[in-house]
Image 1 (cartoon, rainbow, N blue to C red):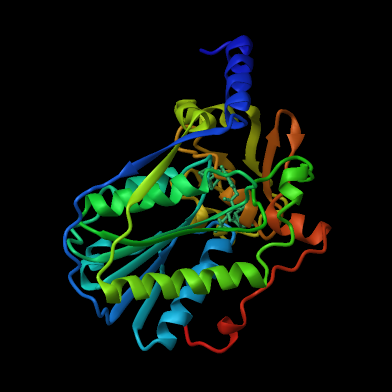
Image 2 (cartoon, rainbow, N blue to C red; image 1 turned 180 degrees about the vertical axis):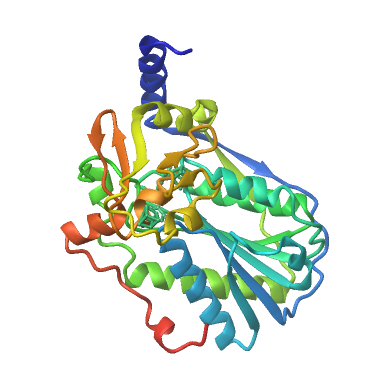
Length: 317
Ligand SMILES: Cc1cc2nc3c(=O)[nH]c(=O)nc-3n(C[C@H](O)[C@H](O)[C@H](O)COP(=O)(O)O)c2cc1C
Ligand code: SF4
Ligand code: SF4
């Protein structure tokens, strides 16, 4: 059992580590297999998204590739049959950055996919920043895909509004990304898609190079554990709950049961997906005694409307 002193000590170390500067880059020159095609016909854009930012970019990429004549499926990783992966000749995966890394449930998922030998693969992340370890998180995705035979051909990171709930949501760093995504962000997505496709046509691959930071080495600290310690209450208000089960659908570990008002604290990943998606403000979470509110309420209170790329209104998804 950890004492209050242990908790404070770990919090201080974690806090200090996150602000230390970048030191090195570690180049990986893995010998990738040959690309199985330079002219992909059937692409898959796979996304994991809690609050819709990553899904928006995935859809935009899908629309761009469709415009280039490819048959494209855009799918939620949660519920996708991984045995279908070898049917595609180009795979792009996108996830948010959670806790300075690829979300743990996505890592577990990718570790058990079948061989995708020779398939061109690209990865992107969405992140709240400003320094979110986004580079390494996208490299982590490529590394996992390469372990299954995928051949890295593209990587990028798109910054947008942060979806990490705090009692007030008004941390200056959090607020600095409130206006994102904007037209430049969508241009970055268009460039990423075009460059990646052009690379495949030329038969080129990219090397996956991690940035070595002290922040990275301190990632071994139990950030999720620390947060779970700080979450002093996590339940469902039966008076407000409308039984829509959105929280269950969004929960990557099925830790929440809105009908019994319970959360399995062992299984919980502290991803805030239940809080951030509940349409009735019925998920009750307290952080060190202070009540949190979710992303829809945050947008409402700040009168924020998230910008949509124009392609989404014309392309068929
Ligand atoms: C639990 C949690 C942890 C997060 N951790 C980070 C982080 O370490 N670095 C970062 O830049 N953004 C972080 N964010 C912000 C998200 O990465 C960002 O808002 C992302 O675009 C959300 O994508 P989604 O809407 O597809 O879920 C975090 C958000 C949540 C909810
Ligand atoms: S998302 Fe909210 S309203 Fe819907 S079942 Fe869960 S707690 Fe109830
Ligand atoms: S119960 Fe835990 S793991 Fe499930 S959505 Fe809520 S915060 Fe995430």
